Structures are given as structure tokens and as C-alpha cells.
Length: 340
Image (cartoon, rainbow, N blue to C red; front, side):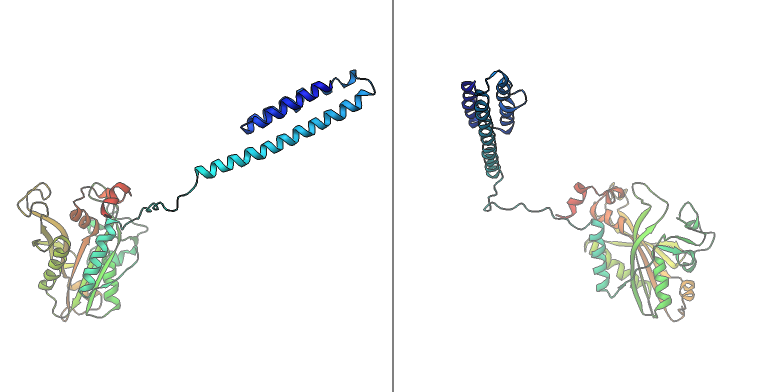
């Protein structure tokens, strides 16, 4: 039996020294020291020995067990060290290699065009005004000479919160607030989000408007024409032609629609301009005397002009975008084109 124990010791020591993985090491432990292991099987035969041999063989078996356990622990540490060394070698960092350039974001095309407009009108002496998006019926409609029976007040066109509170359909309310709180001369630009019940490839229920107002002594349609021509040349290029067409808005009189020569065909006619050579970009006009009077400004002394620009429409025409929904879908592939 002593010879069997020694043979187990030598075979186990050799196998443990050659083990190359933790799983293999565990299998050897079970093979030799487990409940059904080889050394355990030898010890179960101790009852067949004489009283003199039993303590000697038992002592030697315990020594071999302790020896093999120490060998297993030693080999486990060796394997752990080798595994760490291999991992460090595979994950080492070459500090001399160039770093990876992080992806940089850019302004949204709407913000880019808005900042261009703000810089342009500030250079003309305009202040920037902001106001509430949840507006009263008075500031959104009544103060702007829009009567109670006007179609714009219909529930199908306007988001009403209550009978007299709504989501603003235009930023004109800030023009009224400005005229109520400031004396002429006034030059103010009112950009912001607006809301209307409308949605398709060219309309969104939430969109942005940029409205301008000038009130002073002696303001005429010529001043309005000069400001808007400067705006059109800045956005579309100095060769752009500007056309004024008679129109109607309740809060301006006279009123005009403003067109620019088609940027695709130069005015000769194409699919973009539907063969007309012109593209409509905004509405404008001279401030109605009733609106001035309602704000405490004497229309016999002062006059003014106002204009309203749709930021989405302006951005779409400037960048030749054919679907307004692209501006709100946050598709990185689309937005990256404007950051280059």
C-alpha cells in the first residue's frame, strides 16, 4: 500500500506540473484528492492493515495529500501569473500611435440659418425679443386685428388649451408686447417656436418663425423693401432678384408676399419653381393703423413695417431640402451633411 501511495504522489506531481489551464488543474484535484479519487480509494483500504502498519501508512497518506494540495495551489498561482502576462501583452497600448479623433457634432441646419439671420438683423440695428409659447387669444389674434370669426381661430387650425389660452400660431405676440412696453423708435426681431394643426411633407405642427418689426417716424414701404432685399441677398446670394406681390394680412396694410428668383434655374423656370422662375419666401407689409393704436402708438405720427419668415421653409429652400420631416427626424446621416 505504501508503494501505491508513492506511485500516486509521483504521477500526480508530474501531471500537476504539466497542467496548462485552471480546468485541467481542477480535474486533477478531483482525480487524486476527490471523494472518489485515487488517494481516497487507498485510504479506504486502511482497515485491512495491521495495527502496527495503520498509523505509519495513514501518516504517509496525509503527507502526500498535503504535498499534492500545496502543488495544486502553487500551480494555480503559476497559471494565474501566465494568464495575466498574456492579457497584458495582448492589451498593451502603444503610446506612440496617433489617437482616434472623437466624432465632433455640429449645429443643426435650422440653428445655422437662424444664427445667420440673427447676425444679419443685429447688424441692421434690430434687438432680439423672446416671449411665451403659451399665449392668450388677445396677443395672438385680437391685438393683431384678427376678428373673432377669422378662420385662423378655428379649432382645426389652432391648438387651444382653453377658450382664451392657446399655443401661439405666430411670434407676432412679442411685437405687440414690445410696442406696449417701448416707445418708438423700435427695431425688434422675434424668433421662436410656433404651433398649428398641420402636418405633411412641407408642414409641421411645430415650426419656427422669425418676425421683424420696425416702428418710427417716416417709415415707408421703401424701407421694408431695402431690408428684405438685403436679407435675400445675404441668404441666397447677391445675384438674387426679389419680387413683391400684393397680398392681404389682417395686421398689415398694404400687405405683400415676397418672392426670390429660383436658385435652381436662375429664373428661367424649372421643377423647383414649378416653371414660374420665382419662389415665395415670406409675407410682409406696413403695420395696420389699428394695431398701432391698440398699442398706444399714434399712427398719425408713427408708421412701421413687419415681416414674418418661416425658418423651416427658408432652410429648405436654401439647402434644397424637399421634405420638412427630415429636419426633425434626427437622422445623423442627414445632419452630418451640414457639418462639413
